[in-house]
Image (cartoon, rainbow, N blue to C red; front, side, top):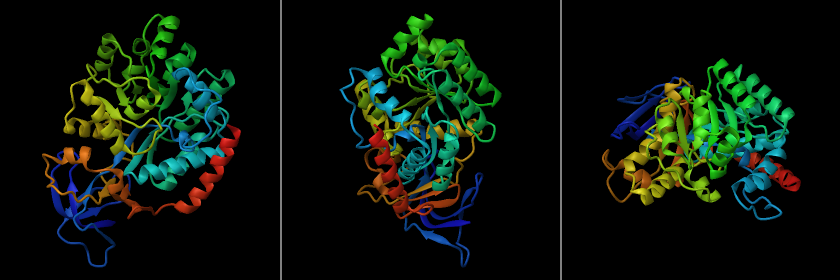
Length: 417
């Protein structure tokens, strides 16, 4: 049992703040409750009035890009987004091997944990090293102490053999652990693969995790090949019927597509910083309802930064209230709980060493999250009742040893690039 002394506990649903001692039970279903006093001799963390609240979820990540920062650039400047995929990201993912995949998961997992994240929904790609890749990622995230929902990015872009290997890895993994069935995007997924992925998702009581209309090229390709737009194609094949399905990006949607999504049971994930980085557009939630989540698309693991980016981007479209941005950050908990995925229980907490010059109340706390709180305020992190970050340092892994390993793997990867 873990005890937090003198915590200013923020209920993540109501934003009400209450100060006192907390008892945090371990395990996937562990509870958090106020207690009048901490038992004599019990292990306790002194919060000294620090804010304590529910930790964060990255609803769409690409951990395989964790070694990309500073890597060699492409031989020429990409002409457009599809060209960037071919020259940069598809070149990177083809050069990954087992050790590099582990390095990415460890580095990305640690960075996310130290930013207050305790659960990652990841979309993985390593077409030349796909066998066993999901176990490598899962084991690394388990070591860090994070919950996870993983998938392989299935695609026809690398040929039949790579497609079949991805399907085999997905099926093998879902037989023993929770996860999703990943697809890259409509323009690299033929009908045969799409229907097989859907059948696999149904067979494993899972959902599809797919990029949708990230660039306008995805829509143009779908109209040319299939005579319809991307969301129409997904709706007609049944992808949208599952409440576990995640559609990612959704920048170039028609009114009809928005209506199809709104009447479905699936979810959309916004990744504003990645969209800006790739110059593909900005997410417009108009007509989509409230089944909207926030991710990072591999840019980083900092959900406070992603929330702020989504909030600021919305100001050019008529505005967004701080509370609405905060609610979008928290919808990932609803997605996981409603679909009975484990690992995101109430005993996942972040301790924030945030001491502003102004008062904090339930009425203004969302504003503090948007304008005040950043990842630098993350003091400690508790995952499933277990302290995984203490005073800014990992407790579960040796950060220095991990860094030595990731530096070596990054050098190997960059030489290949």
